[in-house]
Length: 310
Image 1 (spheres, rainbow, N blue to C red):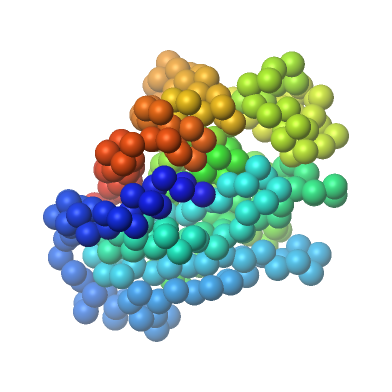
Image 2: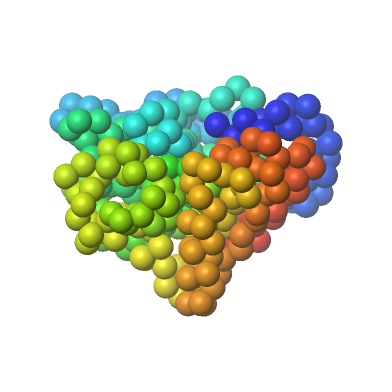
């Protein structure tokens, strides 16, 4: 997952931290803010395997990484949605991703990584979308408990996880209802970061792997209306949250046209959208230069910071 990004951070973590320290560092409010936290949470605590909902005795879990420094009265949130073609992957963060997570947490953010039900012979669309939105609803429900700022929730997804992130961000809170216990809570986000996610499904196109879409959609694979419903591009409007699109110029898994179409439609409707085209980047940005990766990461962190209310 994001192999190129991880390699760059592994070998240049120190210089990255130095360059971002002044941009994201503000007064450390740990001493004063900690008194306001309703649960006695030590700064830097990691909560593993929090159950955010239960479906037919199956517990769906998330990991919550609290800020390494308290720089806000309540903590902004970045929710991470893993990729894996909708049928593989999990919420665990690769060891080499730690420098990325630590930098975000150093900036006063809480990072939440979620699991969702993976598609198989029984589980199909829209189940993974409902799970992703329910994880967002859980954040609203538990904001006081974990000192989370519900006005500053961002969602970041990779590949198929980006598809789920976009669909969750652009759809209404009343769409894709899953858990009845969470259904009364909103799922609104402040922004979305889309790393090379598919944006449009069509029964007559090969723009994205046909077998993957068929596996996700199951009996709806030939249903034009359901394919439209599962396509994030169809939800974009002028009120959609700001979007940052990152896509490799040589991606043959999710063609860049998917991102270009999303960018064009969002721009035409007046929705705030930016797009980073990574030269020589294949899927997961492999093949891109270290310099281009660092520039991309700087833009991602700038985007997150800009769209977080101070």
